[in-house]
Length: 304
Image 1 (cartoon, rainbow, N blue to C red):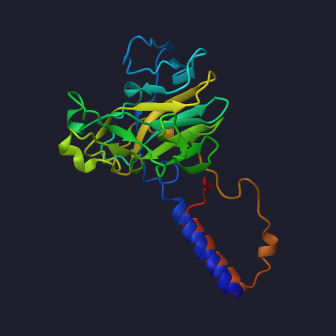
Image 2 (image 1 turned 120 degrees about the vertical axis):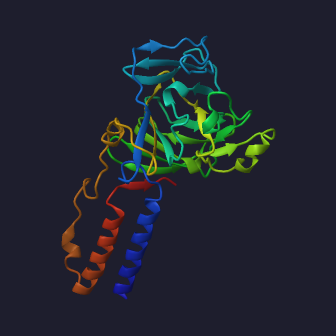
Image 3 (image 1 turned 30 degrees about the horizontal axis):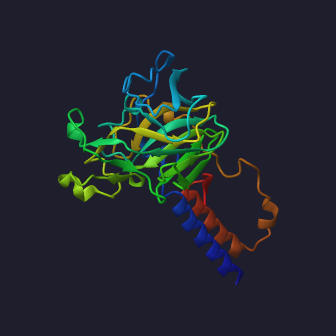
């Protein structure tokens, strides 16, 4: 009976490992390459909100955007009204035509705000990769749904799988960036849903489907946020990732930034009790441990 229970636990462990690693990231899967599309460098600048789209920023009017210490900073104006807080950051994200065949999109973020920030790619201009210079698919864009998934990878090496459980002021789904979080956000292309307007018949088959970036590229990336306060939120190191893309020469800026925690780093388990088990149970447990090792030894929390 005891052995049967241990076997069931071993199977559960194997299945849980498989589920946990469904979302590959550059830190838990060495076959995943990183192509940095912008490492965000330049002289400190406060961007002029009257100059729309220069340097690739469109404004909601509620946020001040600046380049400081080679990072993009958004902070709420002291006199800002409530509502949308949006930045169109094509010149920073630079995903256009770089994302063809990528498994997903990522960036560094640090939430200095006093509370969680809701974040979404939304209202983004999209285009066929072959024609990004001359046009977009009119009145169309992308969004998250409540089933959209992302991974937060903190600078201290913990990966947390999340869903877009937040709700923006416009009623759309958003991922939640916790207060004080610093690290990387990775968003699978499959979590981004395409919204094709009725007047684009040739792309109708892509409507309400996960993004296929071999057919559509993210031409202008809209960072749509709620709850940004005067303390601000920082963005840096925009990138695409996947096993079928070529890594950029500076990919190590992202890949070497984090070392995932290994089991046992937060405290050693008491091995004495387990060592008292019979040899039959030990062999089963060893098999379970081997299975776990095959899955990896990362700390990967699933947020409910």
